[in-house]
Amino acid sequence: MSYQHQYIDGTRIHFPVGKVVCIGRNYAEHAKELNNPVPTEPLLFIKPGSCVVALEGGFTIPADRGSVHYEAEIVVLIGKPLTTNPSREEVLDAITGFAPGLDLTLRDIQTRLKEKGLPWEICKSFDGAAVIAPFVSADAYSDLTDIGIRLSINGEVRQDGNSSSMLNPIVPMIQYMASQFSLQAGDIIMTGTPAGVGPFVAGDEIVLELTGISKFESSVR
Ligand code: ZN
Image (cartoon, rainbow, N blue to C red; front, top):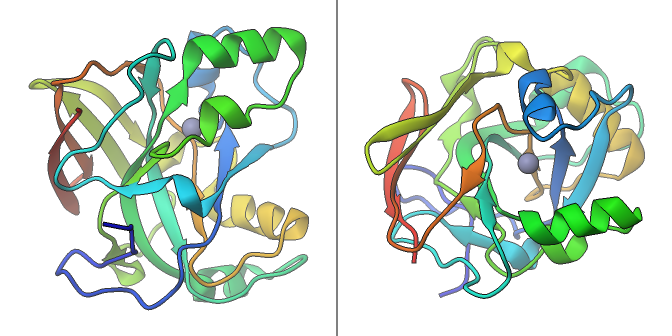
């Protein structure tokens, strides 16, 4: 079944699934764990809408392309167009929902690409590389600098972060993104991963949550 954005109560969201705009190394502790420098300007990349799959009901990882790392991330759903230099108010008005998601990365392949200075698409944009839970409405949060994200695997907490630790907080990040690429209703933003990334193994049972707001169980096939 093809993916469609939906709210946590099962209501379909009537935006097409657009692109997925991502930021790398947005938490200093995560940049350090992969021996990456902390960037001086935001490191952006895009996953196509074709790689988005639903978290619920389980999801499949590639079996034969080296390690597949999880990156738990706060995901923002855009509900109105944003173009160059939007104001803070325009960004807040365009944010329609929040969900936890997984930016899946073929880490062995990415390491080789990074060494050669090559683009990342084959390690970041494969089918199934963006795993997205249902959204809560944007009004679930009054303070976007205090959003918790947590991933547990087989009963053990592996990632436990908060947007308060982001190098580029959500609103300025989206202002910057919209100045690089127009954002459309149905686009989603993956806001970077906190420390604790590692490989998934088929059979892993996971719990992914926006801490205190929404919580989902799933499994890796
Ligand atoms: Zn990521």
